[in-house]
Length: 290
Image (cartoon, rainbow, N blue to C red; front, side):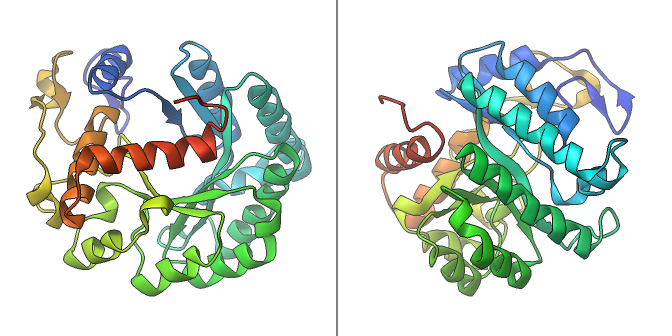
């Protein structure tokens, strides 16, 4: 979407640099570009190399796991290519996690359960070899996800289950693993039930994210009442580099997630942001001095 294309149709020129400018102006100091396939990981690393504030992940999204088996040189070669890329990028300080990987049973039309499970397990090998934390995806698959985590968690230095929208019981099961953290964004904050779950995440296990260009906090979301900051936005057909695009999320909107989560917890936003910053750095940027 930051290329100006939406569902295959071009509406405007790339505005990625304007998106970055807004992010930094809003106080975002580091951006992790998440990859969902080998080709995306290569592109993400190239982009991350262009700015000291940009970082990336290397891994395969559950809905893309058929790529392992369709790879011309076979699944093992695909996994090996991911490994080489992760090692190379990690040595540069640019690749900070393995992922986005996990299970997504909401979209089995893209990849069946058996294939997702096989290559979710395989990506723990990458975490073990590289000693990188994992950026994890979970949708409608808690039972199998927890089973794999129980089997494989010793290979994982740490991991964040991002965009979490599960139940209170699922949250407690995930928190039983000391090295697992919970990522919250607009998709985590849609309903009153979501808010109750988000409010119960311990401060030191919480991470905040946008998952842009997706998962914005919409006017219909229960969390919207806590949001105070809103930047001007225009329809993509009337694109303006000085404005957000309606319906497209950006890193600068991280402040909205902070406002929503601190508001529903009844805590000071600045204090919560400091705690979350330290937690995030401890997992993804352990050498960070801030």
